[in-house]
Image (tube, rainbow, N blue to C red):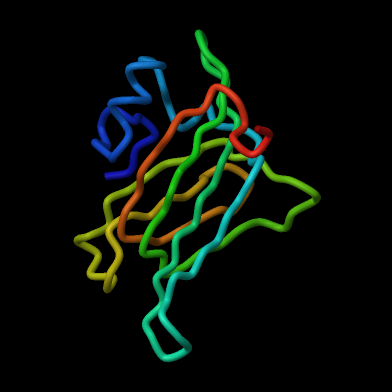
Length: 135
């Protein structure tokens, strides 16, 4: 099942975000303000241990802020051409554990115009009132 409604996902961090923004939906994410790709593998021969963090603006009925999605155990990342930035318009998260993709539980994909997609083992979410990189 693919959804843009945070309440249905039960991801780490959901309760904290929903306490601040009860109407939170992934469809309200906008311009991506930061991306961080980190490989914590031990040496050249070790298996990859990739984490990808995407921070995007959120504009809701009652709050504005920055949302950070942390995608761990990443096996595939597709990002659009950056000209110089991109927007998430219809982001959805799907549990694809039944698709028999080794080491993959979630597909995080934008079904709008950005062609953004990540296959990963885990997803968590955090809320910031301001961009954490501006502090």
